[in-house]
Length: 252
Image 1 (tube, rainbow, N blue to C red):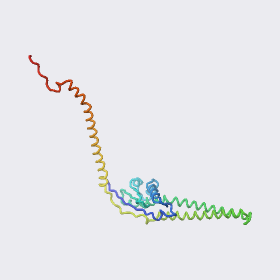
Image 2 (image 1 turned 90 degrees about the vertical axis):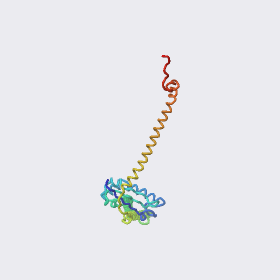
Image 3 (image 1 turned 120 degrees about the vertical axis):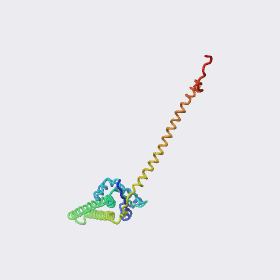
Image 4 (image 1 turned 135 degrees about the vertical axis):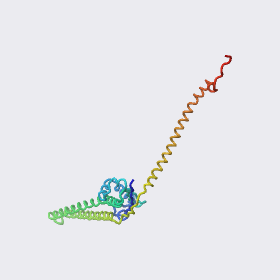
């Protein structure tokens, strides 16, 4: 079979996991991020995107990508093995990019929508305030109440803008090039893989063969034991059969 090539990439997540303002925060930040990253990286949507980005077939990504959490940290290890040496590193980089975009871009999109809605709310509140002011004057209670609603809308807009900035900051940090450290591409030893597969299989086959022979021997012994009383009874009824040839008659 043709040779296979492999490389391992370590993803540093310090800039966008943990901390009070990040999407993944708290005592379960590391495990939550690791679970989400693994599910995304091995999912069909990310692998299709990574395939388009790197030119590696989806089938090779399905068979060759392995993702693991580095101990108890949120850092991840991504390993890819494939038949094309020049495609190993691009595949790792494409999977990293597609996975993190899938995890953080949606948050940015939602934050953008929140800002748009908050801006519309501020515009509507200001329009109502101007209308109330024209109708009743600034001292009217409705004007004061409407001014309070306007201030609330402005506060919501400021919060939405802040959330958008945090989401963009996380996405930018996740898209940085210096957070992925890729090892040199190495040739995968088929002999080692073959030995690691064949030896256990042969050992299991020998073990099962011994068990099978023991079962057959036990069945044969059981059958002989069950037939022995019948043979003993037959010998008792025909003693000459057990003693050998019969004596010739005399006087003839």
